[in-house]
Amino acid sequence: MRPAARKGAPARNRIVTTRLAAGLVLGALLGCSEHADDAQARPRPNVVLISIDTLRPDHLGCYGHVRETSPALDRLAAQGTRFADVSSTSPWTLPAHATMLTGMYPGSHGVRDQVHRLPDDAVTLAEELRGAGWRTAAVVNSYYVGAPSFRLGQGFEHFDGVPEMADDPATGQRRIVNSGDEVVRKARGRLTQLPAGEPFFLFLHFYDVHTDLTPKAHYRELLVGDYSGALDGSTAQLAALRDRGERLGADDLRWLREMYDAEIRQLDDVLAGFFEWMRAEGLFENTLVVVTSDHGEEYHEHGGLLHGRTQYQEVLAVPLILCGPGVPADHIVEAPVSLVDVVPTVLALVDVDSSTPRDGIDLFAASQPRALFSEANHNVRAAGKLVSDTNCMIRVGDDKLVLDRRTDAVELYDLANDPSEQVDRSAADVARTEELLARLRAFLGAARAPDTIAAPGADAAKTLQAAGYAGSDDE
Ligand SMILES: [Zn+2]
Image (cartoon, rainbow, N blue to C red; front, side):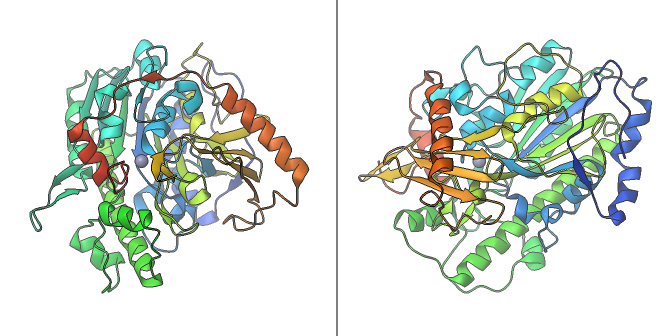
C-alpha cells in the first residue's frame, strides 16, 4: 500500500521496504492508510511524538519478541511504518533526547554531559512547528528531560513535568515509579484546552519502563514467573552490583527481563487508552504518531547492567514506529537509520520547510549510504573516578566500530553475521578498521564547544543517584 503524494510535496523515492505478513495487511487497510486518499482536503496534521525511555525494540512483539508485551504498539506498527534497525546517538537520556528534539548529534547540539545545556541557537522541532503555526505542548517524566537548566523545552508553549520519583507507601522508600497514567492525564487536559482547528505538536516522555522495576500486580501475574533471589528491582541495587562488577545468575536475569516485560505491557495499556481517547475525540485520524526511545538496557550481554556506559546494540538499538498522514502503511524499513533522523522526517511529513542545517535526513526521501554515530556516554569508571564521554561508535552498513577514547582501543563488529557483537574483527580487517576510525575521528573533531552550566544541585543529585546515573559512590 502506497499513499498518494501529499499536496505540494515533491515526489519521493521511498526506501525499499518489506511487506508485512498478509495477516497484518487488513489492519493496514483499516488503519493509517485511510488518511492517504483525502490528502488534498485534509488540514495540517497534528504530531504526537512519544519517547518511551529505556525501551529495547527486541522486547516488543512487532520487533520479534515472543511474549505479548506490546499489543497497542504492534497495532500501530502494523498500521504504519516500522524501522527495524535504529541506532540512538548516545547511550543515555539527556544527549539522546536533545538529539530526538533537534535532529542533531550530541557533538552538534552540544549536550554531551549533565553540565551542558541546549544552546540558544539550536532549533528544536517544537520551535520549527510553533513557527509554522502549530500549538506546542509537552509532558515529560524525568529530571534529564524536564529540568529547565537543560533547555530541552525550547519551543514548547506548555512544558509540563511529572516527577519520576515518589515515596513507596509499602516501604517508605523513595523510588522511581510508573507515572504513565499521570503523563497521559496531563496530556489529555492540555489537549482539551488547546483551541480547536489549530494543529498541535505534543511530545510525551514516559519513564515507566526505566528501572525501578515496579509493575502492578496484574502485570506481574501476566508476565513474571516465581523468583526467590535477592534482587528488588531497584536502580540503586543494580547500580551497586554493576559498580562492584558482580555477576548475576541466570534466574536473576530472567526475572529482571520479565519484570521489564511487565512494565512495558503496563505502559502499552496506558498508550492503548490514550489512543482510544484520541479516536473518541476525533484527534487520531489526522495525527502523525511517532514512537521511539532514547536508548536500551543491558542485561550482562557485555557484562554490564542498566545503560549509559557502552555503545553495544543492547543499549544503542531503539524502536521507531510512525503512523499517520503520509506514512506508508504496512511497511518495514530494514536499512540502518538513526534517532537523529526523527526531526527531519517529521518536518517533511507535515510539509514544513526548514532552513536549519541538521545531521539527520528525511527517512522517506531517497538517501545514499551514510555513516551513523553515537557518542557522549556517561560515567565510565577510570582510575577510580567516574568520567564521561570516553567511548563512541561509527556504523556504516553492517560494520560497527567502537572506540575507547581513553585508551584508543577499537573493536570492529559485523552486525550482519554477529548481531550480538561477540567477535572483534579489528585485527582481522585492519583496512576497514582504519577507514572507519579515520571517519569517526573526523566526526569527533568537528564537535562544537558546549554551553556549560553548573553541575546538578544536591536535590537533583539524589534523584540522579536513584536513577543510576551518579554511580554508587561519592565521586
Ligand atoms: Zn533514558
